[in-house]
Image (tube, rainbow, N blue to C red; front, side, top):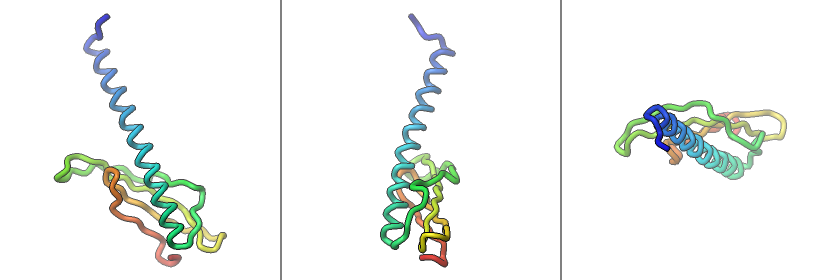
Length: 104
């Protein structure tokens, strides 16, 4: 049995999509750990227990083409009012974490 050229193309696209999905899940897990650690360090409570992807951009630097992902999360200082935070990751490396200025 041989793969036709179109079958090979479909297989390559499927493998690339699976690789992107797997990498995205690993990076999201890292962002979740960072958000939990930042909240713990500042005495805050992470709400909803997770981050959400808010932005995705390609970035070309000396290490090649990588993805810059921005994740957002909610936290509370007093158990009632929600505040927002964000995490920016370049590849799997954390570039920046921000918390709403009037709460932390």
